[in-house]
Length: 248
Image (cartoon, rainbow, N blue to C red; front, side, top):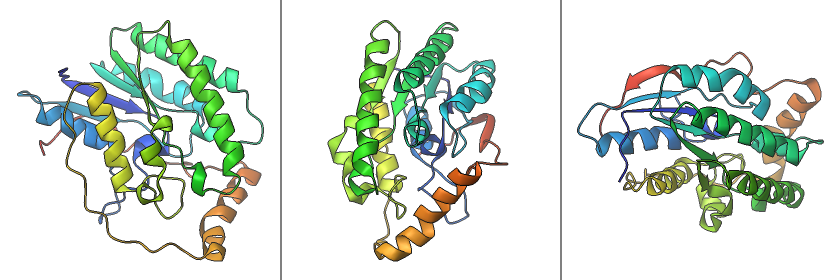
């Protein structure tokens, strides 16, 4: 069993916790669950920061989050990214994998314990899902090859077939719901030899008719792509500095 006194997470909406919205409007997510799991397994105070911002491509994640995260001096760092890249019309899978490997290499050079946490596979339920899945599979394979020579733990949620079931996904079919985030947290904690946190209770949310789904989620997403906007524009990290974690 590994214990850590400080944990920092970087990434996009997956790591920020989108899909696991709390009644007060904040998002929670798997990284928060992991922080809680670390605190529950330690006799000392555990510190946690989350610099992830929704909508970010891998370039901005590495370019604007990695160094500030390392400057906090975490004992444990989780990196996620590339999911938004593979959904763009044009992407170099090899280029994305190279950038991920370079980020991991930079982080491990500081002596911090590094996790690369892949997102789950939502493509069974998405429009054009087969094309996105093909790219996702290619990226997963390319990353695994590069990780053979790096000191990193790959928590590969993309190949978790249970996680692809619709009961783990939110209404937009792209982001995990609270149960999905709890499963990812369990996968991460298991990779560290730690027990999972309790699954949250999930209210029943009926599936939307197809027309409503496209109107509420797909068309706004297309609009942002066409205008160069992002759901994360003008957003700041939800936990920009290390903060004590409350024990569950």
